[in-house]
Amino acid sequence: MSATTTTFAQDIDRYGVIGHPISHSRSPFIHGEFAAATGQRLVYERFDVPPESLTHFIPEFFAGGGRGLNVTVPHKEAALQLADLLTERARLAGAVNTLAKQDDGQLVGDNTDGAGLLKDLAALSIAIKDRRVLILGAGGATRGILAPLLDAAAASITIANRTLARAQQLLAEFSQHRPDATNRLRLAAYEDLHEPFDLIVHATSLGLSGALPKIDACVVSPTSDAYDLGYGADLTPFLLWARQHGACSSHDGLGMLVEQAAESFALWRGVRPNTDEVRRKLRATLDLKS
Image (tube, rainbow, N blue to C red):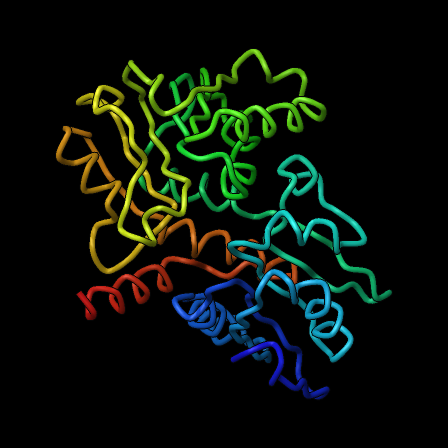
């Protein structure tokens, strides 16, 4: 459903997810399940919003009765500028994945990505404390998970990107808010990675086109856990690569998707839904398409 053809009714709370592209999003299914399980009356839709339309669409959506939006690629950083208030985790991330309209009309910007990732890693029994973490990519997704991984006591976090300048910009902005954590942060270009890591998190959008970062297989060891923020019916290119090079475990971001959605739902509706059944159902829908 496009931003230009959508009309908004006033008799029901309306929510949605915006991105470009957005047809692949499973968020409507997830939030529909949450609403049914918690007895909440709402409508949740997908909206394909190109970047040039973002500053018009968001005010129009909320003026027309919208109560909340999830925000995905490529809008997470731009949406930050459209919020009236920011949660601490959104401010630290420098990116927003959730917008919520308050009763006074102000828009709160939040970032639930990091909380979703930590909850999924815990469900998978993947430790963070005292481990060396590698994050591939320095975009909005990385911004959302960086502070939570630090707060979970990772021994160090290396942010690697194709162009080092983007990673340097992220670190410079993040360090303004968390100077205490910079001693555990490292930067690297892909070609400069020459040692193994305990946890490798793929946070680029390359998997959408069937590609993966050009990194040396030496980053993977038999004790490495591999995690891709992306997901699908088949193994992502990164997870396939990690398995081929001996990672001890490999997991996609389906669980994170559900957990971050539950955090958004709690912000909007004041109740955090149980995620176990939704995770199972969502995985089943993907398996049916494989």
